[in-house]
Structure formats: structure tokens, C-alpha cells
Image 1 (cartoon, rainbow, N blue to C red):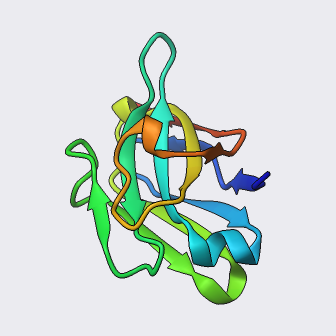
Image 2: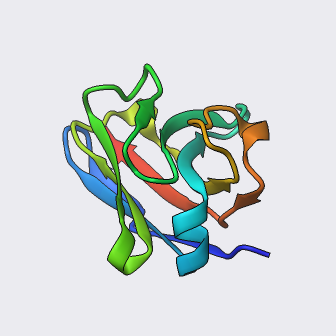
Image 3: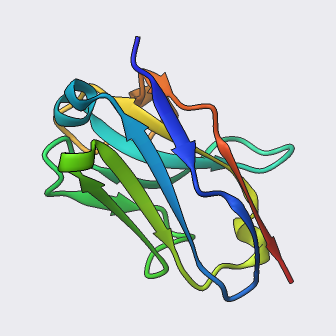
Length: 124
């Protein structure tokens, strides 16, 4: 079992910024591609961003391109999502996931493990 722990969610005004963190075990961090998804009430889980297991490749959902940045700190076994220019439509529970794959996992079914989620609320 792989344990993923998200943190950093909260409430922010539109135009503001937040940084989410996802802490994992060291062996998970080095062996898995990882990503962020989000889910608002009554909607399906939506792809936000992913990073390859070596950290050299990234991918972003169309809704967040140019505003969000995904990164990995190998020394801290932690993945980050830097979110800038936040909009009310970004309000959701954000989940980090780990995928045992050599490619960039952009689909929910690509992921074997998920964290508990952290709430992000953007007020207008």
C-alpha cells in the first residue's frame, strides 16, 4: 500500500495563489509517476497535472495551463502544485495520485493509489 498525504488547501480570493503538497514514501516517489486531479461536487474527477517518474516530463489540463505548475522535490519525497491566478471555477477537492507507468498518466484509471484530498475554495 502506498500512502499519499496532501496538504496546503484552503480558502483564497480570486486572483490569489496556493501551493499544494503531496508527501509520499521515498520508494514511491522514485518509482511512480504522479499527478493531481480535482473534483467539484456533482462532477467527475478532472485531470489537473502530471509529472513523470523521473520528473523530466509534465502535462497539464487545458483549464490550468499557464497558471499551475507541478514539480517534484526528490530530497523531500514531496510533489507540489503551485496554483496562481486562481478562479472560482478552481474550487474543488484536489487529490494527488501515484501511477506505476513509464508515461505521463492523465486518466483516472492510470493511477493505482490516491491521497485523501484537500479542499481548495476560491471566492469571487
